[in-house]
Length: 165
Image 1 (cartoon, one colour):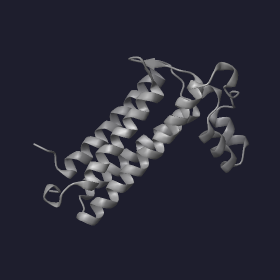
Image 2: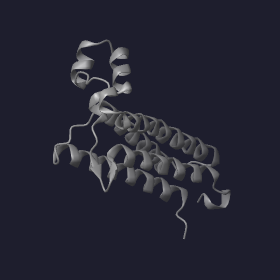
Image 3: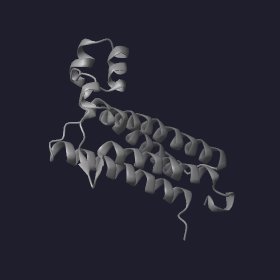
């Protein structure tokens, strides 16, 4: 049996929640310090989850359903862009990796907001560090998850009307 739109949105929300719990575990238990691109990706995971939760709670008619689905496609695709940027940084030879930048708190304390945000989104040498799980980097797993989340939302967008209940 195919889950309803509401159930599918709850599955998306649960997936995003599980991703954030895994990130918290890796940061606080495994002591893996997230880089600026990792933090940006977390933001898009949270945004995708919030969109799915709002869609599940609201349970709108066709037009609202389509709006949520489009937002649910755009958010993970933007997140995939940042994961892709991190994968690119990780693929660079050691002599071409950009220098490590200041910490996140320092950037937002010292630089104007827009400049700090630009530095955050660009990534730096810290983002080139590779931590592998099951043979793939965390950025690769996150990229795969973002593409999967966008795919499920695309499915939601293209669903037939009779399967919306």
